[in-house]
Image (tube, rainbow, N blue to C red; front, side, top):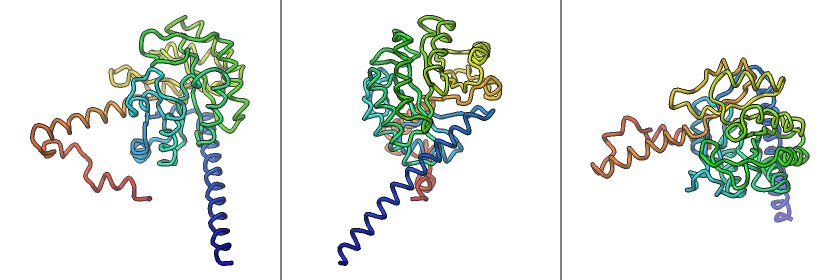
Length: 300
């Protein structure tokens, strides 16, 4: 009898834990949708594991971007479509478990055809992702800032978005990304995006935009659609002011690689100090103390 009671208690605790997790996921989606319907542009740092997610959130990020490029590099590969959906999900699981902020995740091309994309949407939703972006590149994709980008027919992409939306409904926001600017030009990209929104996309992400004039054109062409903007030029002085972006319907400004580049610089500087001096004293004032590092995990 005692054994049965223990098993029942364990089972009830597990069910309660799963229910709490599902409620948290739903709450995050509601929060994300509310933020996207407002008038503010949120900076979303590209995180790539649980540690970077905790640190970004602790520093003040209200939305985290699970960057496909940063995750690929963290696993050990370039951003050229070499990481699988399940590998990406493994990192996204770490990120979501480590933070409370809504996670906006990179779904690349949906990792294949329309059927693959629908499965990706379902799996991302089950993981607790609040929103994702999916792009119209051919599979396997490559970083949008690299040469050699190729894109699929617009209707094929629209079919992907429709299939993904049918899997998740309103429980997760889907941002359609087009890489057509570098291939076909802005007008063609806007034609594609209009088709994608009609297919069910909640948000629009036109990659390859570098100035506020182009942002204004996109906002005018897609009234009432929340926009995503890539601040990929942030470290070269080409970042656009967040208030100016907000005035033109941009609700998320992505900084996909900057945290990782900063971390890479710090790791290399620390390693050089070790190799040169057998010590890290020379860079200690640029490092976390043990207490600062461990303070990230106080809630555990």
